Image (tube, rainbow, N blue to C red; front, side):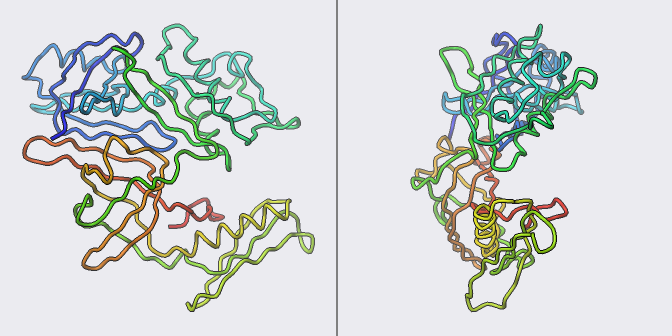
Length: 368
């Protein structure tokens, strides 16, 4: 069984306050373009001093170590007694930015941004937040660059001092730019110091992992729920570009595959004909995938070791269940780990999405 350790430290200095917190009911994990989270419980009867430290929410962080390797880290935001237990809630380091604001305007002179790289905006947000007194979490953002742009000469991206912007919302806006970037958090030991890093991917995180497989009878447990929903299925996509009336570009991309013909209309603001064709074809390919798998419970296994999981990677999943046959590629967008406790084995729930996903519908929701 894997050896887990839960370490408590000061948020700003990194000073270790306790090397082995007696936590139970632990669930934790990272996510794509989000901070991830941890929930756990501590019985105050173990050590009243530890409970007092955990009660100092907002100024301490929890690090999760598995077999001497850090898997997750984040800030403690809540620790409130509930009967004999002390529930603990923590979120990744980017959750801190949602408690901070741009008080100087344009990140103290780093903006406004005209055709700015959203990756650079995120770096500037962290630099601004951490240069303020008592604001340094020692978070490092990598130097990835993207081809996406934010702000124009007529409409610069700005954060005015007269209306202080929430820093976390600025990061969220950068990650929402089409074909821009994705991010996730990692922690690792650098000597006795926990190095906290924001990993950027432009336009996306991860890669296809030929070295990992998840298969019924090997490392897949419980009953995976594969949904076959034809509401979003289509073999023919009509791509609609910018403009009005006869000047509006239309592209048709379709195939015949022996199934009843189903069509989907893709509304865009594309002016470039080549780009519109590319998006239309991609949408058709995405909508020809009928089965959907959003979660998969796995165990640690040489075919897919827990320590090898990376947010954003595409992995192959093969399921041979009583009512389900599935063989396809899915993208890992996060996971939740439940460490074993002697009676219950270690489990990981992968959070998945299609490798190729349909674009958002006109009502702002994503297709299933």
